[in-house]
Image (cartoon, rainbow, N blue to C red; front, side):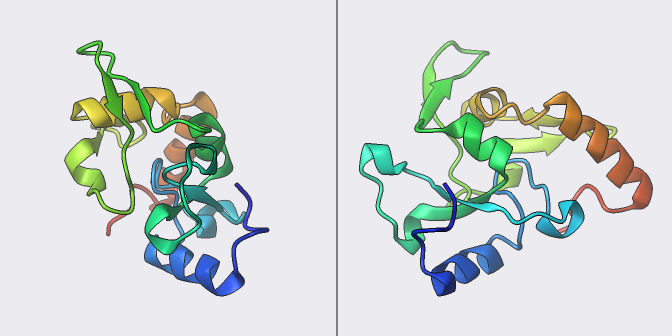
Length: 142
């Protein structure tokens, strides 16, 4: 979702809380030079409110892949599980970087399902991560 219906001050607070990074793939606004979108963690279509506790930053591709979903299939167990909530969950508990740092690996059912559902290792992003690694910009250190 774009920030059109979200007050500017709220959008700024959410962006600052997210460190100007996508809550899912961790891509940074400062690296890509494009603003992130405001994601409704519980989508508007499912009754999610436009309130700070339900908002986080997402890049347009992660947000597009997420769409109106709140759950996806864990490829390991075959169970439907909730998607990662970047506002209230710790990214490092659900995901890790592979040895080269260019792929995200899911550690939990939520991490695995989110990684597949949001296509967190899309080829264009993996190629970009490889360049960012060479430049010393990736993976995020905080």
